[in-house]
Amino acid sequence: MEMKDFIEHFVEQFDETPSVEVSPQTHHHEMDEWSSMIALSVMAMIDEEYDVQIKADEMRNSKTVQDLYDIVQSYLNK
Amino acid sequence: MLQLEGKHILVTGASSGMGRVFCQMIAKEGARVSLLARNEDRLKETLALMGGEGHKYYICDLTDEEQLKATVSTLEALDGVVFCAGINDFVPLKFVKQEKLERIFQTNYFSQVILTQMLVKKKLIKRNASLVYISSLSSKLGVAGTLLYASSKAALNSAVRVIATEMAPLGIRANAICPGIVQTEMLGSTNIDEESFTKQAVDYPLGLGTPEDVGNAVLYHLSDGSRWLTGNCMVIDGGYSLK
Ligand SMILES: NC(=O)c1ccc[n+]([C@@H]2O[C@H](COP(=O)([O-])OP(=O)(O)OC[C@H]3O[C@@H](n4cnc5c(N)ncnc54)[C@H](OP(=O)(O)O)[C@@H]3O)[C@@H](O)[C@H]2O)c1
Image (cartoon, rainbow over all chains, first blue to last red; front, side):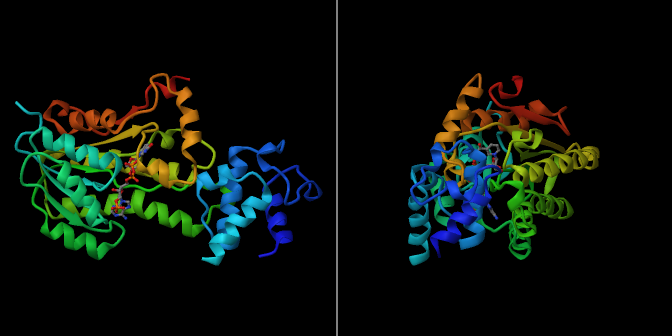
């Protein structure tokens, strides 16, 4: 799993946010476009792309894109 | 006299959440309960919580036709069935796939219809019995992310009306109950977290529901007191729909 691809998939879930605005340090909960629907989409994307089912509280407790990436990575390492 | 004295009731989804509480409430009203679900340990836990006598549990995956057949062949005649087994999966439209549709419809719709069909064909549903299907308020709304779940429950609502018509000559009744959000294990297992459910509580004039709130409606549906009720879909949602 590459961070670059992860961000690309992540950004695909948004309608307006351009990919230049998202980095591993981005606090996703603070993004303008962030919503519960986007959170659901990100979880569905992670399921589809990485075959990982992250839990709702993991989604909520992750602050940055890096955190999310690390969660997915930890499942992949299991 | 107890409301369900002498009756024999089958409850699917008896190993958790609402199904578990329904079993306890039904037993308390004097009925003998047959419990059905996949997880034996959790079925036993339910059994241990129940009063009364003569209850039995059946380990069965409703989506497996062979297991279903085997279970139905050992069941005794029924005065009522509560179809409570169900699953949920919140997925936005753009991630909907045939496979996901099939999975949710297997459990929430196909298996409900097939189980009913088998019970009827085998004449295991007694005259004047009551069939109670636990649907969901989601089937009447359009909440984002609920496409799979809501449409599986809407299909169930339609089936219930047809079943009601076909079974009426035998005095057998079929009704759906559509609860709003009820605090059960299901909420924990979905991909929507508890916090967002708690946030939704503000939209419920009477607060979120408990399994007992729905259980009281189930008892009414199973009792002879509801003998003139069929093909109905009862919304029970603490006033959520008023908004
Ligand atoms: N909670 C809510 O807010 C809410 C609101 C409206 C409607 N509902 C509906 O109410 C019903 C009960 O929900 P709940 O919240 O009590 O859920 P729950 O705690 O997750 O329980 C679901 C039950 O269904 C059983 N089940 C699932 N798949 C099965 C299968 N293939 N074969 C046999 N049994 C199966 C499970 O048992 P095993 O895992 O042991 O098989 C479990 O006992 C569901 O139909 C749900 O859609 C819930």
